[in-house]
Structures are given as structure tokens and as C-alpha cells.
Image (cartoon, rainbow, N blue to C red; front, side, top):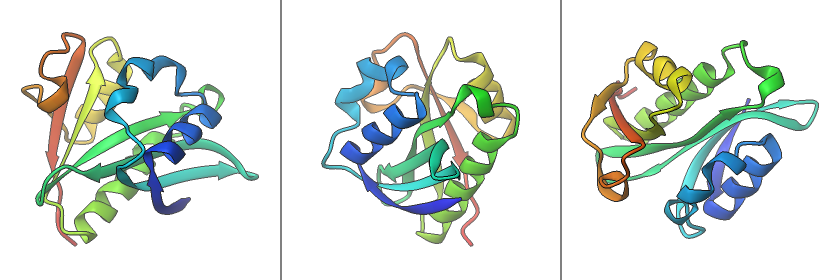
Length: 143
């Protein structure tokens, strides 16, 4: 597991390396290069196989972004481990909540988030008018 800082450009490049970029092209406008992200990444012999990130949304909340696992590595709970690491990091950095947006058709992702304690909330910000978006939130414990 590698943790650290990234920016929107690096996140897009990481997404392409892992294979998650192609299904998210319509959301690129919300993942600009000026944002600073905190990143968690699993490597298999220097090959990125799973990653996720979060970025500040407000003083109390951060937004979980781009959680993805390469298809051939799924079933190993890597996404859950990535999210857990990001939650710990966000709490250590003073955030009280993590929020996220996912697509309604991504039922496996929705089930994962629900299993991890995320609850559906009204769509927020740039996702408010996107009918295929589903937003969720979780209160995290400050460590």
C-alpha cells in the first residue's frame, strides 16, 4: 500500500494505468488538475492494481474519488482496504465526513459502500442534476 499526495492530472494518469478512466470520461470536468488529492494505491510488483483518493470538499468533509480495482484483482477486498486507509487518513487530517458520488448502474460499488457504512444522501454540488448519479456519506471517527 502506498499513500501520499496527488493532483488531478496524476489521478487521471493513475486511472488510465489501472483501467478505470474509460468509464468515467463524462466526469473529467469534476476532476481538474488544480485539485490536491490524498491517494491510496496498491501495487503488484510496481504495477498499480487498485487505488482511490479523496479531496477536500469543506472544512469538515472530503470527497472520496476514483476508487477502482483492476478486474483481474477483484474479489480480494482491495477496494474496501483502500477506502479504509483513506478514511483513516481523512480522520487524521481532521475531516468528520467522507462523501462520494457513484453511478446508479454500479450496483456492486453501491453495495460495497453500504457495507462499509455509507448512506445515500441527496445529490450535491455538480452531481445535483445528473440523473444517473448517486451520492453517499459516512461519518468517520477522528483518530
